[in-house]
Image (cartoon, rainbow, N blue to C red; front, side, top):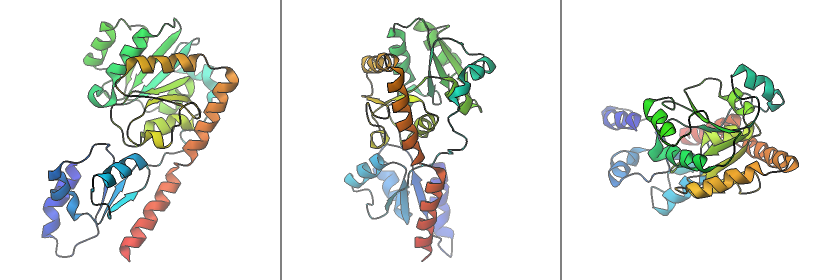
Length: 274
């Protein structure tokens, strides 16, 4: 948003006007002010999920300028090497036994819904289940206070910002996303690429690729009990069911490679260049 503000103020001063491509990642509908003050000058507005594309088109948000190009993920970095799970857990100082749920999102409960996730996890009756919160400020005093308040100390760890997310994902068992608002949810696709069975709220563009019971599990947002039931459901999966869902998740993630995204942007720039 701040980059667009800068461009909006400097653009009129340019003698030769370049082609402008703005990227819309949020699932929120821009305000009327943003629409006419910022986005009006764009030649194309790229949206990163099919859900956002449909929403903005329905809202008549410059429909002729909208282009759907999904964000890409690095499939080489986020590969499946969970055959090294025990070794990874030892290296990362994680419990060697039990089931590990992982949430990757910066600490921002109003958007990422960590409060909903922690409430649901506090209701889960599983002695050997653990939850890792990964992202900026997940190790903050505010996060620790909520974990303490719900009696989850020793069961939930806020790890803060990490560079070893692929290792953490491969060391875990289930990915869970509790967001109230999302674009395409790149963290979810990265987890799917590693072969994790994922649970996510049905927000933003997520339902366009995550199909309940097929390559993961969908729940409504703002519903701790629904999230709890989904966690109980994945814990009850037979081994063959788990691996079938995990394989379909990996197959889905392959469709969102960074190479495919780069190719589509190249085609867009070529079109604008004439």
